[in-house]
Length: 249
Image (tube, rainbow, N blue to C red; front, side):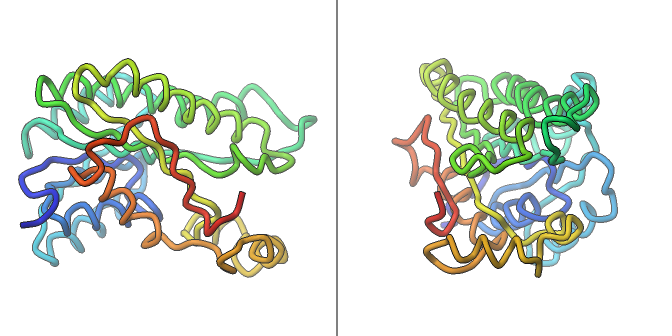
């Protein structure tokens, strides 16, 4: 029997990259998946088509996670499509680097609104949807909280908040049978890292020299960890921060 048979999962920011990989892997293990996106409708529909072609169940739902009304609609549409939620993957996130001199209010709020406020709003919705059954929440954080690269003050701060929220809520939500854990990937090859110019750059080469396993990650390196955290196999884990970086710290 598949590990997530009869489960319903929401993956935020699932139109590409790590989110898309996680959505496909959850579906492959039997979950009915809501592929959330903010603006990349075509990408989200492609992920849904891939899942359905492989025999799975998925629906794309647009919602800006930083807006409470959108989050309410996300859960309403999820319930209409598949019922109440069992698994939430808080993957939606944005990043923008800049030296301290370049930080603006817009730079700050854009990242904190999505990466922190959005995560909290969607988690609120999950707690309501889980009900007495409990469930599993998986937050996608980053190894920037350990390696603290220069010119990432705001982005690293958002992910530090995610790590702290994960551990706080593990204690707060444990009595409700809700587990919450974080995955902190290192650099992963995605559409985003290609667009940012990281792939094939000197930065990538320098980084890989510091990674014990000698390469950057791929979405398929992260997705199985999410499946594990979503399933009963990790039933005794909560409040954990799993560093998925090929050993880079």
